[in-house]
Image 1 (cartoon, one colour):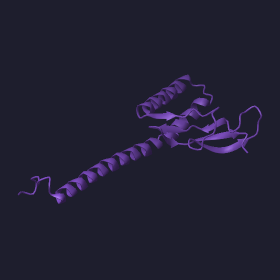
Image 2: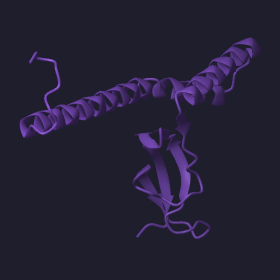
Image 3: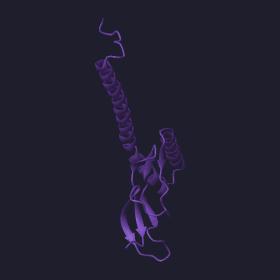
Image 4: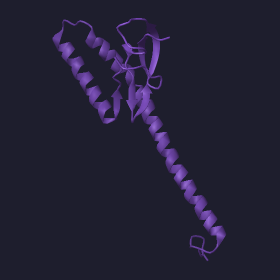
Length: 144
């Protein structure tokens, strides 16, 4: 019998070898998918400082209207690219602090806020495929 011809199903060595090969194939496919996802997340994370810089630039006063429109267009295109890659900015202000998504960098005591309410977002956090790409850096109120 040739090397690639199927042996009868009754041979337990053949069944064991076939099962081992199928398990190997499944593991390899899963590992490749995981590596691809990790590489996409690492690449996407490299563009987040660009988002921060453009957001700060747009918040600053600018007397040159054409420059401002250019920055707005670049920012809009960056957000569209993020959307295609399923990168979503977190909306954290006013939410309750969750260490899975947020990093508290400061705490304040103020009776107008609920316990552990996020009062200010210092750096926007991002999700990619429902996984945290970057934690939001926030200020939290009324922590004990």
